[in-house]
Length: 80
Image (cartoon, rainbow, N blue to C red; front, side, top):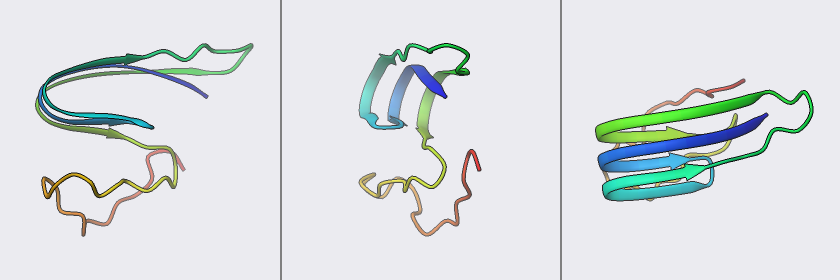
C-alpha cells in the first residue's frame, strides 16, 4: 500500500511511519506515488495539541517521547 501524509499540528509530537517531528507549529507532507492498482492511503492529520503516531503492523513505537506517554500501555496493531 502506498501511504502519503499531510500533518499540521499546533504543539505536540507527530510520527508517521519513519518521519517524526515535535515542538510547535509542526507542518510536514510526505507523498508516495501509487503504482498500478496499488491502493493509496492518505493520512490527513490536523491536531491542535497532542500526538499523532502511525506505524505499520508490528513496527515498534519508539520510546523517545520524553515521558509524554505511558510506554507501559498495551498496544495493538493498527493493521493486522
